[in-house]
Image (cartoon, rainbow, N blue to C red; front, side):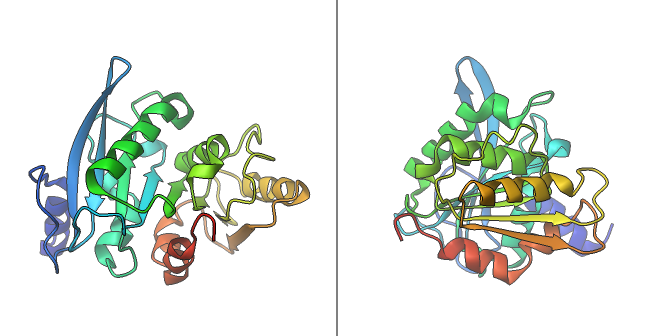
Length: 244
């Protein structure tokens, strides 16, 4: 393992005291969190960008990971691509990231109330602009963020959903024009590309005029780094604002 890789792993696994801003010039800070909700203990992390201080000016991104990051260690969600993009390019993601972890053998739909409670607690504890709260999800998390958006469309400013399986199409007609950018790899053999194609068609047929779709030719399921490292994605996402 190289020096850079070891340093990255150490940074991802490091917890910090529950106080103080992330120092300016640092790669940001992960705050390990636990939440007992309806008798169950859950874990999540909050990423604070460099120079963060509690206040209302920060955008907030609620990011949901894929199936392979389920667990109870609280660490895997920090390694998803949007968190990595924020670490590598903090200037593109000057935002608070809320990173819940889905327990084993659960789906995001099963723990949606915990996820929303973790978001609310993070907003109160670390601050954030409630008109600039975003959803970002990859694979299983892509379905999860659309389910959350359909449940509370008035709460979020925009959604990025990458390589998701959208069985049931239950979100059609419930997003109320919420800006949505969907992505999928043309050669995805884990989640077939028709999952996104069909949902986009249904959303547009239902009158959703704020949906964009990008299909990456020749690429498979693991396109998450490609998406979140694209400066157009962070620029688009953070430019959205409820009531704009």
